[in-house]
Image (spheres, rainbow, N blue to C red):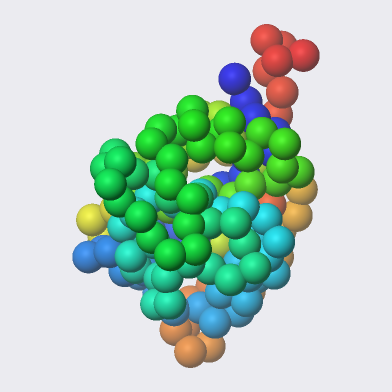
Length: 170
Protein backbone atom coordinates (compact mmCIF):
# COMPACT_ATOMS: atom_id res chain seq x y z
CA UNK A 1 0.00 0.00 0.00
CA UNK A 2 1.36 3.40 -1.05
CA UNK A 3 1.30 6.11 1.61
CA UNK A 4 1.03 9.48 -0.14
CA UNK A 5 2.17 11.33 3.01
CA UNK A 6 5.42 9.33 3.21
CA UNK A 7 8.23 10.98 1.25
CA UNK A 8 11.85 9.96 0.86
CA UNK A 9 14.53 12.64 0.71
CA UNK A 10 17.99 11.47 -0.34
CA UNK A 11 21.16 12.47 -2.20
CA UNK A 12 22.37 9.69 -4.47
CA UNK A 13 25.12 9.14 -7.01
CA UNK A 14 24.20 7.86 -10.46
CA UNK A 15 25.21 4.34 -9.29
CA UNK A 16 22.68 4.75 -6.40
CA UNK A 17 25.52 5.12 -3.84
CA UNK A 18 24.53 7.10 -0.74
CA UNK A 19 27.18 6.55 1.92
CA UNK A 20 30.41 5.06 3.12
CA UNK A 21 31.53 4.42 6.70
CA UNK A 22 28.30 6.02 7.99
CA UNK A 23 29.11 9.32 6.24
CA UNK A 24 27.73 11.10 3.19
CA UNK A 25 29.73 10.72 -0.02
CA UNK A 26 29.84 14.40 -0.96
CA UNK A 27 29.35 17.78 0.67
CA UNK A 28 26.84 19.99 -1.15
CA UNK A 29 26.03 23.05 1.01
CA UNK A 30 23.07 24.03 -1.20
CA UNK A 31 21.65 20.52 -0.92
CA UNK A 32 21.85 20.72 2.89
CA UNK A 33 19.94 24.03 2.72
CA UNK A 34 17.35 22.39 0.44
CA UNK A 35 17.02 19.46 2.85
CA UNK A 36 16.37 21.83 5.74
CA UNK A 37 13.88 23.95 3.74
CA UNK A 38 11.88 20.88 2.64
CA UNK A 39 11.85 19.01 5.97
CA UNK A 40 11.47 21.88 8.47
CA UNK A 41 8.22 21.60 10.41
CA UNK A 42 7.66 17.99 9.32
CA UNK A 43 8.44 14.66 10.99
CA UNK A 44 11.66 12.97 9.92
CA UNK A 45 12.01 9.20 10.22
CA UNK A 46 15.44 7.60 10.41
CA UNK A 47 17.42 4.64 11.63
CA UNK A 48 19.67 4.90 14.67
CA UNK A 49 22.89 5.08 12.62
CA UNK A 50 21.55 8.05 10.70
CA UNK A 51 20.74 9.81 13.98
CA UNK A 52 24.21 9.01 15.31
CA UNK A 53 25.77 10.45 12.13
CA UNK A 54 24.07 13.84 12.65
CA UNK A 55 26.59 16.32 14.07
CA UNK A 56 24.21 17.70 16.73
CA UNK A 57 21.79 14.79 17.17
CA UNK A 58 18.06 15.37 16.70
CA UNK A 59 17.24 17.89 13.96
CA UNK A 60 15.71 21.11 15.31
CA UNK A 61 12.17 22.19 14.39
CA UNK A 62 11.24 18.70 13.24
CA UNK A 63 9.65 15.74 14.96
CA UNK A 64 12.49 13.19 15.05
CA UNK A 65 11.37 9.55 14.89
CA UNK A 66 14.05 6.86 15.22
CA UNK A 67 13.46 3.24 14.26
CA UNK A 68 15.38 0.84 16.47
CA UNK A 69 15.08 -2.77 17.57
CA UNK A 70 16.37 -2.02 21.09
CA UNK A 71 13.48 -1.14 23.46
CA UNK A 72 15.96 0.31 25.99
CA UNK A 73 17.40 2.80 23.52
CA UNK A 74 16.50 6.48 24.00
CA UNK A 75 17.86 9.59 22.29
CA UNK A 76 17.30 13.19 23.36
CA UNK A 77 14.65 14.96 21.31
CA UNK A 78 13.53 11.75 19.59
CA UNK A 79 10.54 9.43 19.60
CA UNK A 80 11.46 5.77 19.40
CA UNK A 81 9.54 3.25 17.28
CA UNK A 82 10.30 -0.39 16.69
CA UNK A 83 9.04 -1.15 13.17
CA UNK A 84 8.26 0.40 9.81
CA UNK A 85 4.55 -0.17 10.49
CA UNK A 86 4.77 1.66 13.82
CA UNK A 87 6.56 4.57 12.14
CA UNK A 88 3.81 4.79 9.48
CA UNK A 89 1.13 4.72 12.20
CA UNK A 90 2.95 7.42 14.17
CA UNK A 91 2.75 9.86 11.23
CA UNK A 92 -0.58 8.79 9.69
CA UNK A 93 -2.22 12.16 10.50
CA UNK A 94 0.73 14.26 9.30
CA UNK A 95 0.52 16.08 5.98
CA UNK A 96 3.98 14.81 5.00
CA UNK A 97 6.71 12.85 6.77
CA UNK A 98 10.24 12.42 5.45
CA UNK A 99 12.38 9.29 5.43
CA UNK A 100 15.98 10.49 5.82
CA UNK A 101 17.97 7.24 5.98
CA UNK A 102 19.92 5.13 6.21
CA UNK A 103 20.16 2.43 3.60
CA UNK A 104 18.09 -0.24 5.35
CA UNK A 105 15.36 2.28 6.21
CA UNK A 106 15.27 3.55 2.61
CA UNK A 107 14.98 -0.02 1.28
CA UNK A 108 12.04 -0.74 3.57
CA UNK A 109 10.16 2.50 2.85
CA UNK A 110 10.85 2.72 -0.91
CA UNK A 111 7.98 0.35 -1.88
CA UNK A 112 5.40 2.36 0.12
CA UNK A 113 6.60 5.98 -0.35
CA UNK A 114 4.42 8.32 -2.38
CA UNK A 115 7.12 10.90 -3.20
CA UNK A 116 10.88 11.10 -3.76
CA UNK A 117 12.94 14.25 -3.30
CA UNK A 118 16.21 13.34 -4.99
CA UNK A 119 19.50 15.05 -5.31
CA UNK A 120 21.07 13.08 -8.14
CA UNK A 121 24.83 13.53 -8.57
CA UNK A 122 25.83 12.68 -12.13
CA UNK A 123 28.82 10.47 -11.35
CA UNK A 124 29.59 7.18 -9.65
CA UNK A 125 31.02 6.92 -6.14
CA UNK A 126 32.59 4.09 -4.18
CA UNK A 127 30.26 3.29 -1.29
CA UNK A 128 29.13 0.66 1.18
CA UNK A 129 25.49 1.84 1.33
CA UNK A 130 23.25 2.12 -1.72
CA UNK A 131 19.74 3.37 -2.34
CA UNK A 132 17.36 0.85 -3.95
CA UNK A 133 17.41 1.02 -7.73
CA UNK A 134 14.72 3.46 -8.84
CA UNK A 135 12.33 2.32 -11.54
CA UNK A 136 11.87 5.79 -13.04
CA UNK A 137 8.83 4.87 -15.22
CA UNK A 138 6.91 4.29 -11.95
CA UNK A 139 7.38 7.94 -11.05
CA UNK A 140 6.03 11.21 -12.42
CA UNK A 141 8.56 14.03 -12.49
CA UNK A 142 7.08 17.12 -10.81
CA UNK A 143 10.21 19.29 -10.78
CA UNK A 144 13.79 19.14 -12.05
CA UNK A 145 16.58 21.63 -11.56
CA UNK A 146 19.98 20.94 -13.15
CA UNK A 147 22.98 22.39 -11.32
CA UNK A 148 26.77 22.41 -11.26
CA UNK A 149 28.78 22.42 -8.05
CA UNK A 150 32.03 24.33 -8.63
CA UNK A 151 33.57 23.26 -5.32
CA UNK A 152 33.24 19.54 -6.16
CA UNK A 153 33.35 19.91 -9.94
CA UNK A 154 30.29 17.82 -10.77
CA UNK A 155 26.82 18.19 -12.21
CA UNK A 156 23.79 17.26 -10.16
CA UNK A 157 20.04 17.71 -10.27
CA UNK A 158 17.17 18.16 -7.86
CA UNK A 159 14.23 15.95 -8.80
CA UNK A 160 10.85 15.87 -7.12
CA UNK A 161 8.97 12.71 -8.10
CA UNK A 162 5.51 11.42 -7.29
CA UNK A 163 4.65 7.76 -7.60
CA UNK A 164 2.22 7.11 -10.43
CA UNK A 165 -0.96 5.39 -9.36
CA UNK A 166 -1.27 1.85 -10.56
CA UNK A 167 -4.72 0.57 -11.57
CA UNK A 168 -4.80 -1.35 -8.25
CA UNK A 169 -4.55 1.91 -6.25
CA UNK A 170 -7.33 3.77 -8.02
